[in-house]
Length: 445
Image (cartoon, rainbow, N blue to C red):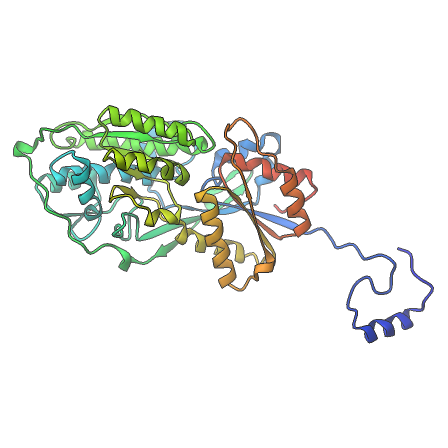
C-alpha cells in the first residue's frame, strides 16, 4: 500500500491531536477489513434432513448450521411405530404433536359423548389437565368411556397441559446441528421452556355418557389440512405419519363412541386458496375436527371459514404467537408451542457462539415476522444493541416452483457484515444460502 512523504512520527502526532483513531490515519487508502465468517442458524421450518437437498450440488453449505425446533425426546418405540406407518420417514419433526392432536380430539369426543364440534371443543383443554393421569391411548379411552376425568400425557405433551387458550403451557426444544448434510442426532440437546403454572385450572363441563357406549352422531370424522404440497411439503411426511399412527391406535383400542374414527385426507398446499378449498370440501363431507394447517399463516387464512362452519381447527405445527389471541370462538387449538417460547431458545443458541452482529432473514408472513420479532426482543434483552441486529424479510413465492431471488438480500447481508445469520423460513429459504455463497460471503462450517 502506498505511503505519503510525511514522516510516521508527524503522522502519529497529527492523529493524536485530531483524535483520529482510524486505520486510514498514516495512509492514502483505508486498510481492508478481513472478511467476517457468518454462521448459519435455522428454525423448525428448515432444520430438517430434507432441507439440505434443496441446495442440490451445494448441500455441504448447510454443514455447521444450528437451530431449534419444538422437539421432545422421542422413545425408540414411538419412532418404530411411525416407521411402520411410513418406512421412508427421514424426519420426526412435529410427528409427536400431530399424534397428540388426533388423540386429544378423540378423547375429547368420547368425553363429550357426541361428535358435535362445539361440545368436543369444550372438552379439549380439560383432557390435558386436572384429572386421572394416563399416557396410553387404550388406557385413556377406557377412562373416558367410563366418564372419568382424565389428564392426558402423550408424546409431545409431557410436562403440563393446555392453557385456557388451548395451547401447551410448556414446551421442549431441540438444539440441532447439521453435519455431513444431515442433522447429527448425537449433537441434539433438549431444553425446556414455559411454566407449568400456566396450565388451565378450569374444570370442563360434564359430557353425556352414550347409552351402551354408542352415540347416534358417530362416527367422529377428522380431516387433514397438512402441507402435502407447497413450500412446507418437506415437513409433511412426519406430520402425516403421526396422524395416521394415532388413527390406527385409537381404532385398535375400540374407536370413539362405539365406531372407528374416520380420516379424510386433505392438502393445505402451503397456500391459502388451496387450504380454503380443502376446508370447504371437509365441511361438505361432515368433518368435525380439522387437523392442521401446517403453517401459521395458512391457519390464519382459513380460521374464519372454519369458525363460520362451526368446526374445530387443531394444528400440530402452528407457532405464531399471535394466534394465542385470535378470535376463534373457542374452536382453535394447537399442540405446537407459541414462538414466544421458541424465541428465547433460538436467541440462546446464537448467543452461545458470541456473535456481536446478527442478521435475521424471515418469511414475510405471520410465522416469519412473528418469530423474527420474538428473537430480536430476546437478543436485545441479552445486551445486543439494536444497531447490531439487522432485520430482513422476503416475499414467499406464490408458486413454490418459482425460486426467490435472494441476490440483492445477500449483498445487503454482506455489507452489514454479521457473524450470525438466522434464516426463518421453509424450503424456499434454501436459495438464500447459495446466494450468500455467490456473493462471496464466507459461511462458517
